[in-house]
Image (cartoon, rainbow, N blue to C red; front, side):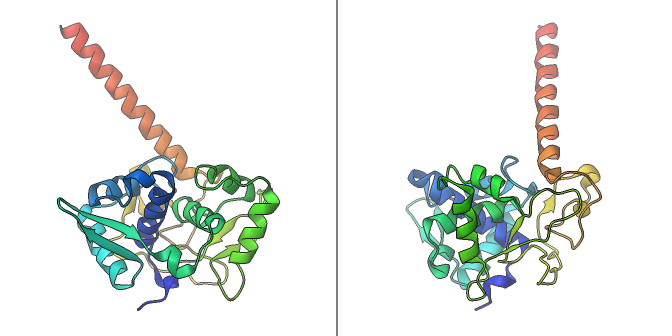
Amino acid sequence: MRSIADLNPTQVRILGALLEKEQTTPDYYPPTVNALLAACNQKSNRDPVVQLRESILLEELETLRQDVLVWRSDGARVARWSESISRRLKLTAEERALLTVLMLRGPQTLGELRTRTQRLHPFTELDEVEATLQRMATPERDLVVELPREPGQKENRWLQRLGGEESPTRPAKERPQDSPEPISPLNEPSAHPAFHGHRPDVSGDDFAARIARLESEVSELKGLVQRLVEELGG
């Protein structure tokens, strides 16, 4: 069985999506492959935005199953998948919420984490967020790490340590050949550090989120143009 620290970016995205579904939509959990694929590839609340193929998803799910990090339940119609990483890591509700958001959205500040975990577990104060992260960052657990403040940043950010990301004390891993490609200008996979060992030369921390919003706006404009053409043609 591999170490959890050996997870690749695709596996981190899959586990993060499963954790999110378990906490936000328990009535529809565990999800089918199609539902899980949509959760992995959705454009909101994801950094980076990726386009994962179903064949790769199935391969990675099988690898995670062998590592006892996910379970497959074969129902009457379709197979469904559930996570078991939270049990393996003995996560509390607070820890599970923070780890989920870090796995899905990359390094974040205390304020960002508090805001983005509201649907999963409401934190009343930033001190509560920090205290939980400190418990997760002990040498015995080594689940998260506080990153050094970068030039131009006002606050430190926190990074999950399950794999798929570069950290100051763990060398960056090469992105597997079949990992999902980030959606970025000119379809360049180097546009996000989660898949490569360097940060793009852009300002701000929400590069992929801005790209996703632009793509959404372009899609809406295309739909509006199409409706206008149909109305004029009719």
